[in-house]
Image (cartoon, rainbow over all chains, first blue to last red; front, side, top):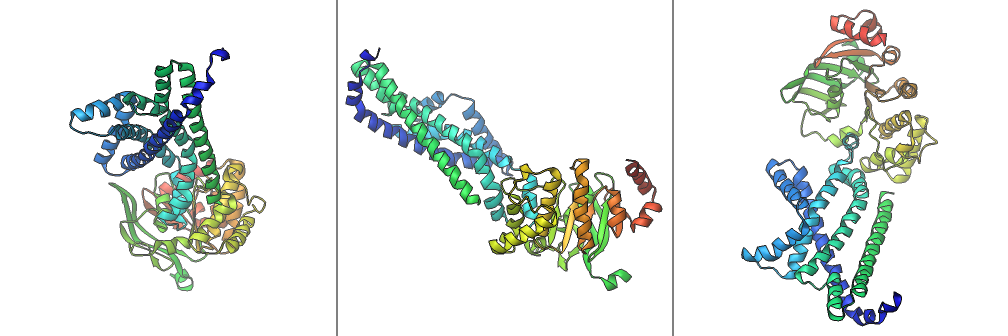
Length: 221
Length: 251
C-alpha cells in the first residue's frame, strides 16, 4: 500500500499546505477572538438583570445552537448579499465561526460563573472584600480554572469547523487537500496531509492551555 | 440599664424593621448587646433569626429603624461598611470557605486585602488563629481535605484573624455530623471565656445554658422573650417559647 502512497507529491504541494495552514490558523484565531467577545457579552446579557436583553441573548444562543453551522454559513454567504449586505469571503467565514462558537462559549462562561457558590461570595463580602477584590481573588481564579478545559474543547471544535469554509472557496487546509486531489487525483495524500496539520493545531492549543493553567496557579499563590 | 451604664453597648437595635417584598421579616426589633456579652438567639425556622444577625454587618439591609454597631450607623447608607465588616467576624452554617485556597490562605486573604497587612505578618497571625482553633497542623490543607468540623473551625479562624470586636455565628453546627459538633462548640466556649462579644443563632441549648449571658427567643420576626439562661429555660414566659422548648429539648 505504501508503494502507491506518493510522498514526493506531498513535498511538492507543501508550500500550498503551508499557506493554507496559516490561513486556517488566522481564520480560526480571528473567529475565536470574536467568539470570546461575543460569548462574554452574550453571557453577561443573559445573566444580567434586564429582562428584555436577557431574552435577546437567550434567543441568539438558542437559535445558533439548534441550527447547523453549514446552514448559518450559507445564510451569511448567499443570504446576506441577497439582502444587500456584501462581505468578503474571509469576513463571512470569520463572522460565521465567531457567531457560532460565541453561543457555545456564552454557555460555558455562564456555567463557570454559576459554579461558584453564592456562600463564598457572601463570606468575602462579610470580611470586607470589595467587588473587584472578590472578582480577582475568589470568582475569576475559580471560574477560569473551571472553564479552561471546556473552552479548549470549543476552540478545537472551532478549528475543525473551519474546514467548512472550504465550501465558500477560502484557501484553507481542507481546500488544499481538495486542490491536490483535483489536480493530481491523490485524495489519500491530500486529505491525510490536511489532517496532520489539523493535528498540529490541536497540539498547539493543548500546549497553550497547559501553559495558561500553570500560570493561573502562580497567580493564585 | 444598670448593665448599660457600666458596659458600652456594642450592638444596638432601635425599632428595626425589614421586609422581603411583602413579607415582614423583622418587626420592631429592640435589642442591646453589651461588650463581651454572649447572646444566643433561638426560635423556629423562618422566624427571622438569620436575618437578624445578617443585618448587623448589612448582608441584609434594614428598611426602618436604627442599628448602631461599634458606634457606627449601619442603617446609614453613607457608613463605610468595609471598615465595620473588618470588625465583625461572621461564621456561616455552610462554612463557605474558599475551595481554591489552603486553610492559611483562607484566613490571611482578608487581613492582607482589607487590613493591608504584609504577607509575613498576616501569615504569623493566620498561623496563630489556626493554632487557636486546634488546626496548627492543617495550615496547608485545602478545605476539601478537611472534615466538616475542621472546615468550620477554619471558618472561625478566618473571622478571628481579622482581630474582630464581634463574632456572629449563624447556626454554626447545624450542617455538622453529630460527632463534630462538640469540637466547634469548644472553640466557641473558649472565645466566650476570653470576652469576645458574640451573637450565636443556634439550637444547641446546652451551649446556651452553659455559656451565654442571655437567650433570646424569636418568633414571626419578633423578639418575644429575652432572659438569662436560667430564667429562660426554667420559667419561659410565653406559650410559644414553652412549646418551642418542649420540642427542642426532648431531642
